[in-house]
Image (cartoon, rainbow, N blue to C red; front, side, top):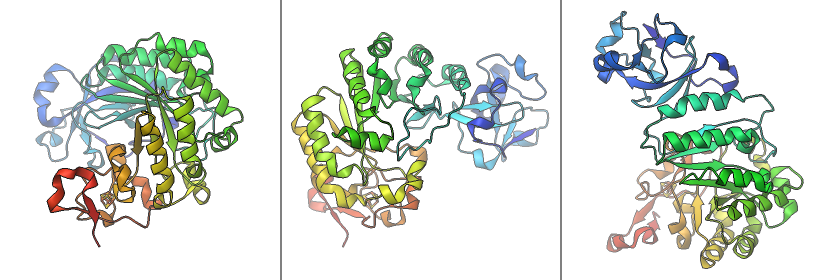
Length: 402
Ligand code: SF4
C-alpha cells in the first residue's frame, strides 16, 4: 500500500499540470462498499484508465485495512487525517497532492490564476507572471465532484478577470453542477471598465453570484498607491458602475490599515453618495500574510486606534441604508456600538484564537484571528464576560474582565 504523505499541499507550480487528476476522497469507514462501487485503486491501475468521477480511498493508519497490502488504496499520513469523506484532492501518479475542496469547510476558495494587473501593498497572494491556464482545466475537472449541498464557493486570484472567457467557463460549470451554491468572486474590478465584460458575466444569469471589489479611498491617488497601479481608481469605479448597470451584485471591500484608516469616514460618505446601490460594504482587518509581512511597518496600526474612524464609517453607511459588515475583527477591540455589524468571516481552516481568549464568553460569536496573526496582533485583546442580568441583550451586553 502506498503512503500518501510527504508532498502534500505542494506549491501549484511544482505540479506537472498534464498529470494532475481530481478525485473525491472516501475514507476507510465505508471501504468494502466503496471498493465495490466507485473507488479508484491506484495500484497497480493505469492512471489514465481510471474513469472520471471515481474516488480515492484513504485508509487511516489504525484501520484494519492498513495492513492489507492487496487493498490498493492509499494509506493516509497522520498529517492528512483532517481529510474526510467528500473532500476533493488533486493527485499525481507520484502522489503529489493538493487539497482543492473540503466538504465541511464554511468556505472553499478556488485559486484560478496567480497573475494580476495590480500589486497591492497588502496582497495575501503575491502575483506571479506565469502561464497557469491549466488551473482552470483542473478546476473544471474537480467542480463536478463537489458536494451539491455546498453553501458557497469563492473564486480568487491573482485577478480572475485576466482569464477572460475562461472565467465564464468556471462560473457556468459552478452554475450547472452546484445550482444551489453561492459564488463569490474576488476581483479588483478594473477590467469591468469594459461594459462588454460586465454584460457577459451578467448574461450567465447565475442565481447567486457576487463580485467583491476593493476600494481603498475616496481619493484616487491614495487608492492607486495602495494597489500600486496608476488609474486603478477610475477603472475600479467604472467597473462597479458597469456591473451594477448589468444587475450583477457587488460587495465593496475595504482593508483597514495605516494607509487607509484615516479616510474611512470620507470613503463611507463617497460610497453613500455615489455608490449607494452596491449590495454591501465589507470593512476588513489586515491578514498578516503575503506582501503584508514585507510592508508591515508601513501598514500596521492597532485596531483599537482606528475605532473612531471605523464607527463613523459604519454609521454613515448604515444611515444611508448601505449594508455594512465588519470582517476579520476581534469583538473585544470593536466599539460596542458597532459590534453588531461584525461577521465571523475568517475561513475555519485558518481561524484561531490567542491565549488571551481563554475563558472569553464571546468565542462563539467572535471571528477570532487569522492563524497568521501570531506575527502581530493587538495588545488590547481581553476576554469578555456576559452580564448575567442582561443575557437577552446579545453582543451589546458584554463587558471586559478586569
Ligand atoms: S478575547 Fe474574546 S472577543 Fe477578544 S478576540 Fe478573543 S474570543 Fe474574541
